[in-house]
Image (cartoon, rainbow, N blue to C red; front, side):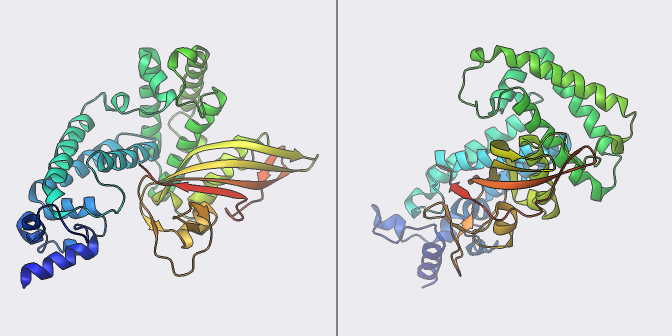
Length: 371
């Protein structure tokens, strides 16, 4: 009876397909026999199949703890930790997919062992990569990152800038560091727009030679700017109030401020901001921007986080903006969200101040899950 109860629990939370198994003997095995920590760790409370396996299997459980420590150590040595979190979120999505876990699709009992073995192998390999001093270049997935890693002088310049920025931000109070890290992330997006690297992740590096000079100039200028601050982080961070031009850079700053105020960085990373359209008078401007985000931590598709950080509720079945009352659907790690929104700006003090204080309303939107 106990084995039957455990099997029924597992069927309800996603470890067992509610269908006839190829091997009836395997399908009748209690989960506790396959995952010894399942009951002790209350794994039935975990709704994601991969997380259930890490919860219930001793080796996976230990590997998961080791992986978390390696990730934390890496985040502590990087200034652009939002990009690192995004990269890790994509790795989790790809790992699950390669091991046969597709979203929340249940894993059949007879498939638990091969899936578990795959997860353990992928996790151990990930830990080895994370502790490698060359990890950032081993894990890059953007054109800008590949260009930087392919040129030793650019890689050294990036390392120097990162070190200088980390040293500066370490001098800030804890409540000021989030804003500083958010601003540093925005530097990177601004760099990619300036160097014409945005949206070119599928373009061969050999076709982007002119961007290397732009990246070199960027690092030289930023290192000089950070050095000129003479150890005072407030000369670099938290100063901007207006933007010189109402364009994509101004929209990016506006989005960063809205996200910072709403603690959106705990759930979403802004991946890309680009200009779609604009209109301008002498004293005001309207800029329509495209904002691409990646989910770093699960949240409900119709919730204050969804509306405050993406500008709308979502119907995840269609991937379209839509209020779904009472829906419990959740954005999972690795989801990508793209919205289009108009931002209002006013000319003030020789620059352009963003008048938009919320992500609503959204004109167009799409949400896509991982593979």
